[in-house]
Length: 356
Image (cartoon, rainbow, N blue to C red):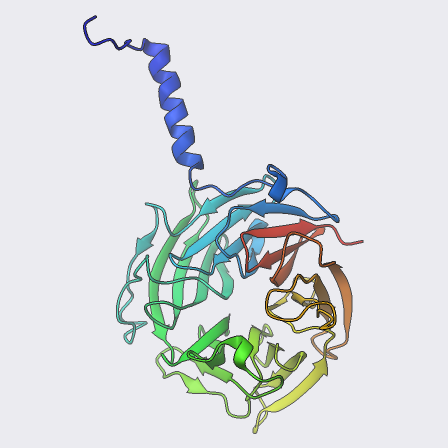
């Protein structure tokens, strides 16, 4: 042979194809739990690493799966199988589709710019077995609620973008919760040009907005808050629950009252996201406050606290947490998944643990 290269036999070709297939399949995969020193289990926590800012996590209905956001551009959505810790990317893959439903979302300027948006807060509803409608807040090229259809009835997950509802472009919107009629409520946390850390403690910085199919985005009067963050809605749409970071409160609004009725309870930490669970409780996560005498500034190591609250009385109990030495920081969300609690963060990982 003059080329100096060996020709592969039939089994060599098969082996090479398998290696190539494996490399392609795993090139964008998240790091499995405990596979590297930076991802080792600690304090009862195990990690799934290699994600891009999984700020919010939600349970995917009857499937038992977990969906995590990707809160940095280019945006991501991750589908995670708790049984295997397998992570599947749903957006930055060839299977992702964009099909604009212009009749339902006429104000949406067009498809996503996949390199100039992110997926922040998540709200998901199972409309038929293994078929879901998914809402996310997004930033980047536009401030909007992006709307998708997620089909898990086939062998491969199928995510399709269907449209968007533009929000106020001078605001920074954080979380979204779908209403029973297909509308939503969302938190305008602050003005877009005002960093979170620049908001004085307790100062009013934002408010809630709602949207209903065929209508405009509307301010919910009487919902002025200090850094309104996570948001959730009761199944009948009557109550709206807000995790208020600036005043360290869980707030409940009654949408049937005019003017809107408000009830609040103080929390021992600044809450981030809030989700309604199958057990009927609200689960809320956030960083544990740091003693200023120990550390001051925005980058202090902090543990995290998770509580569950009764949606009627707002009484709450601590159900988990960790101290400031853990690798996971800037904790932002929690959900129950079977006997475990899963935790999202503004880092590169989610954590899971079994509460005592």
